[in-house]
Length: 482
Ligand SMILES: Nc1ncnc2c1ncn2[C@@H]1O[C@H](COP(=O)(O)OP(=O)(O)O)[C@@H](O)[C@H]1O
Ligand SMILES: O=C(CO)[C@@H](O)[C@H](O)COP(=O)(O)O
Image 1: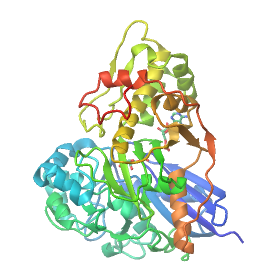
Image 2: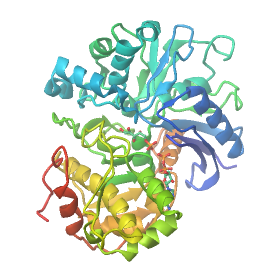
Image 3: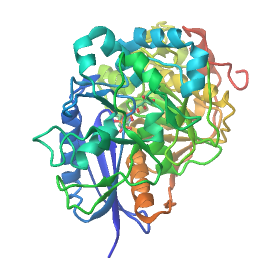
Image 4: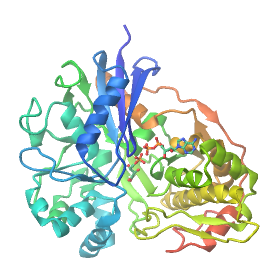
């Protein structure tokens, strides 16, 4: 009989479940369910989506182990009885920008980076705790424990929750997490592997329980009968980007560029990084190593918005974009629709530059949208490379990576060769890899095939034009002059 494992990606827009065979990695079943929009979400919606996505995947009664990866940084504040105090503040909620600046100023940016590998920006959990202390002191005073989305879902799945609504009750000491998600809190130290609880207290104003950090293949427990039998082993889970790296089996020389709700650029390294400018976050990965990363707030949804404006679907947007030449006749979209995190401009809005009569066409706008989104990621790639990370190839994943025009324009924007793994849910796959690792004690190396390798076609005009309109300065000089 096949031994099956499940991996979950509780991402910003959806919950996705894959069920794979341990021996081969073959996909057996999958499911998904939607999440509500917005940057403030009741975690109960994520629990409902998890239950629905598991049901959509045919249930997990025949699954031997499961792990949950999820969107990073989101603040789930719990009271002493295990109740969620207020809707979670997500990674892309920028109301905590001033709180992040305050924390960085109080500790000193360089000292903060040396203690956590990161300098606070609005996305990080510590900044959200400080915002809570400053704006909702009554709620802040009630905080007994702080969890991230994947920690809380893992706790719920194991049977914990508010008294009366969960079989094992509100045991806050049973909360667990992993290194990768702990490293996104800005109160965990990737150099020592310990929490820096003075920083949590500085942010929140008082101590709180934090999830115990498990190793990459440590058991979190078992499912206690809510959606499955009692024998399904549960892994520690991971932040979604670390999950993606695990699912791809990213190795030295691979830089992953993910174009989902967030845009991210990251690589697995054997040494932690410490960027005192705060551009590159010095995260941990899900295999015991490290994950230097930059994230942008404006990625696939830039294309969703411009496709909507042009009244075309994603393929139509791609077709239009390829009708315009590289550089889109000088039209540049600086795509800060949601503010921006890299560069750190939380209050910015999007701007269209270079409008001439020749450039004011549907094809030029479609291309400018794709180029602008990719230029933000290319600047991030330079910053990651600036931390000494090798970049022999770019692995392009995430919803928008399936778009043929995005693939082709990526090969015109990034300098390293671009490869596109076969369409898949690599974050959920990484969680499934972890589940198999926890179950068997050895990390599986399931094959990942490459679906496309767009021909190298670097077009310096794209980044040169974009850089002309940069606000907040370039993140770092390009690796070679355009
Ligand atoms: N062919 C496509 N071209 C461009 N964008 C796409 C395409 N397919 C999906 N998307 C977009 O990708 C996003 C979802 O990507 P995904 O990586 O699943 O995101 P997340 O994990 O952040 O929820 C959505 O905004 C969706 O509209
Ligand atoms: O904030 C970050 C990484 O630091 C984001 O990457 C979130 O983890 C959300 O990811 P998606 O939902 O876009 O996959």
